[in-house]
Length: 559
Image (cartoon, rainbow, N blue to C red; front, side):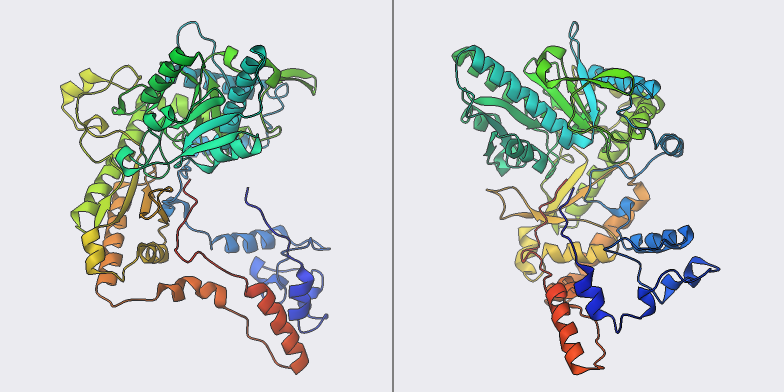
């Protein structure tokens, strides 16, 4: 959750009010015919920083809050986020019917617990759990918690091995690429592990590469975070290549370093698409991969608030991390960072898995990739943009994959259709920037300007720098989700072209005026008394003059 600072209403409302007897300072005033005929319509401010002494009618409060929320962006047009924004009607109905159920009350809601266990089993099989292994896992509040749990398990196993060998446990470290999502670095900081954040480069697709891992591991390395789907460009990191490096390291030194795959998005894409992860393995088919996480609320097609963590076998989850809880008449085993949390998302996840089935998920993911390819090719066809993401580029071999639960050669060969198998595998992400030729011809046009003008048309397309070492390059990024229809895609391309042409046809525009303007607004003051007006101006300057934004317009939040 984002941090928030307390706002003292006394310094704002008291000083800006004309007098303490203003109607806004009185309690609720009588009945009303409609929400907009109540005192909140023109006489009172809706309480913002302190709980009011008296309540207000539900319809009035509902309308006021709903109206304020209209200022938010439209979820379908939010192309910055991987989080799903489209819920089927029947799934929504199940969610509403079960929204008050607490996932922690296992004894009270045994059917919901059973559905959670079924989801863990389905995902374990989907990710290639091997015969004889007893996979274990749990739902989490998104992939952030899941990553922390996976990291904790690796750290504890490393500590156990070190203590058994009579060695110290003072300097654990973990490897990840500079493209890693912030949750991975949070794990290291919060749980006292040195984060070895390895530089990325264009040569290796702006993500972690095997040679960097080889040069940075040692006996204190508790594990390697490998990302199946970089949030920057959508590339899959080479899990199998990194696994081979760790195999070689163990043969030479005897040190066993595990892999945790952060498949926040890719965990629901790679298993279903024809492309899979190309001719490389990524899941539990690799013995080195001990745990995998994913976000049900991304391409699992559930609403925000659900992640999953699976260990290939219960032996890889240290027993001293598991709590046996005796709660409300029941006994349960728990390994989470949270306790009470909604259970409705788990029910919707199970609904999706059964309703869509393997072929249904495949159709959804193939459609997302097809639309992402079309957008990529359309952008490059203008001659103004070039894509950093590569899912639109032909694969070196267009033969379908097999072995990862995602190949279907007979179907492809029989139908001769174009699928994701014909292209480089990755997430349905389009990361692009202006071409060098365009920037030389129109040096006044900045990508931030394009992002701002697209926002004016309600599209949310972030502009931000690539990871360190490549941060001189800024990219615009579009995440294609299942709510991106072909018609909506057509409108997106049209708006991008129109915005770009608009900038090409005009001389340099100072977009800082548009972007910073919202921080420069100050309310008009009534100078009834000179002293009081000056006092108000000081308060306004204090609270309204603090607004700042990044000079370079780089958006670091890329999740």
